[in-house]
Length: 299
Image 1 (cartoon, rainbow, N blue to C red):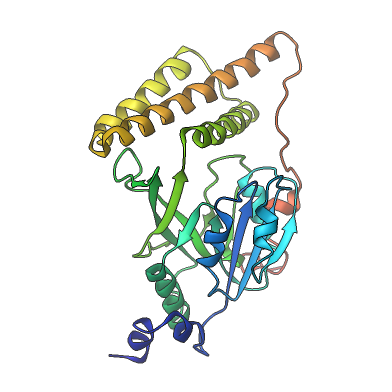
Image 2 (image 1 turned 60 degrees about the horizontal axis):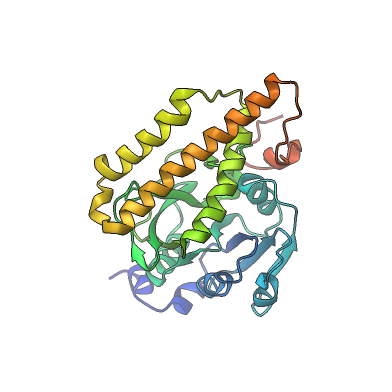
């Protein structure tokens, strides 16, 4: 067994204290996450730096967060990508782990990340799979079986594109996938699901409007129907039981709502009425890599 193998079999503290390990910053963005924030923070206390960027929560999120040794900043929310890019410029270390408040880093994943940072990463970024949990049950099908996101990366090589929703990190390949997943407590109730997908539908419709997308019969009727057929039948959501039926049905309804909202924007536009969109962050500094990053072209 090599020294690194021995370390990976040891405690988190042994891995964390390895003098050759690259330091890690964790970024968590929040808004009204009092139910989740404490457990999320506990799962990453082994990191060298934790930055929480809050969008002026009105619940007890910040009260609970201040019980932990972390840095807290507040910023108006312009979408997940804008918030994360802004946060990347505020952390000290090159290697960053991005988390949502409803996610947890399991101990096996923490060990894997620390071991990688000891051995030296071979790539600029890494996918992490997510185990999605709905009302206490892991969803293993329903379109979520292959859910993975790039969350561990060298910030000098990664930036999010200017999109309100579904913004995947722009980073040079290859991007291998870590072995162990995040626990993702996606929805704790149908009410919470509705609150989230109302936001996603509004933002997705606004993004589609800005990108010149249309919303006709095929989009409003066809896309939701296809989403349900694909997730419930082709991706075997029925194997998740009633949880799968509800998850697939709600996903389809979210698609219907997004394109209905986009249709409303187009109708108002045709009538010469004002189209009310959520605010976007169009500050170029949010989307450009900071000067001196390794991806800047030579002068």
